Image 1 (cartoon, rainbow, N blue to C red):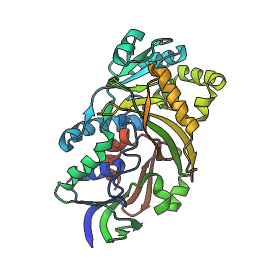
Image 2: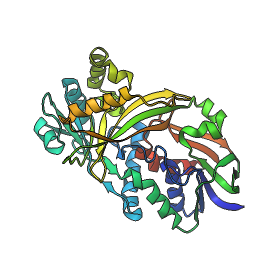
Image 3: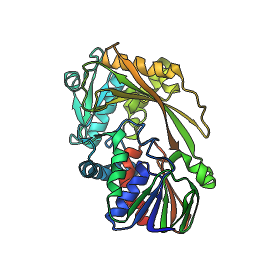
Image 4: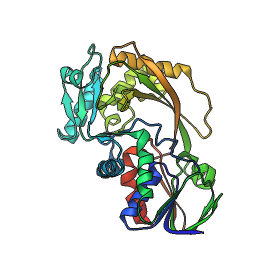
Length: 367
């Protein structure tokens, strides 16, 4: 039987964030995961720490997480780029939303761009380009390496054990029962994301937890280089700091008549570039407790059409297609006490990469 100060169930980014903070506190930690490596939302995302477009609690966590990402990138040896985000405005309502956010946040966080300045930073189609904004505090993270590199770094720290390929069968105060034996700890954090209902169904039901199913693409575009993340008008309807503006509300009303396809698919059309030059493009959203297992070619074609229009290019080759899944519930974060010293934690808004390293310290403080 293994005994630790803290057991973390789940070795995705949210679970690893709790383990990293525990190490910083000098605690002994055991991390347990059913798979051999992180294969869920922690690697299927954009690699985008979307800091500036958050509000309230999420913004505070994102601000705190930013410094941790920069330090971990150096310590664990994966890429974290301070390249910011360019938000492209192709309609008057979109530019109005950026004007409002800039007035609220100031030049250090939101730098308005002319159409020429946008085109200088990202190779977008200039026709109908109204301008844009640079969000300089956002980060681009090497998402397909980050979780594995952090786990390897943790494994090298004194007092840390990571048990891969170990399914968890039950959790109760002081005890985690696994398919490979029992783990004991005074503190237990359950970070299994959208699979919370598999382990703690009553907690998931109380939170009305659902799965948000995404469709995403990896595209090859010859000779293309884009350093920052790129957001579009559809992103302004998703991220709260922009969605709360009058400009975004006006855009949504216009799209009800002109672009219902984007609204029906709950599209957040954005892109980031991988180290090999391919683009990660997404995404669509569908919500259900048990989603349908099928991908929709129509949704992939919608994302492709939007990308062709954004870049003004037709030479896009699909390299990979995949579905992502994350937990969704009312509010952005689920923190549910399960018993003495046991807490279930999920980021329920698709911003785990952005906020987890700010959220984890508050959870451990509460324990």
